[in-house]
Image (cartoon, rainbow, N blue to C red):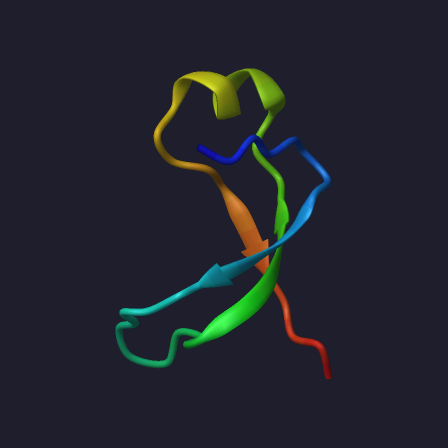
Length: 51
């Protein structure tokens, strides 16, 4: 299991996608608070592009 903290930049595989969502492996910023990261199986991220 990977430990992530708010502010980390991680690589995420965003597949499968629906409609016009970003696809593929993208960098993403972890925006969820650390306390929630330790107890939740899900993490809120903000994907972004390198271009």
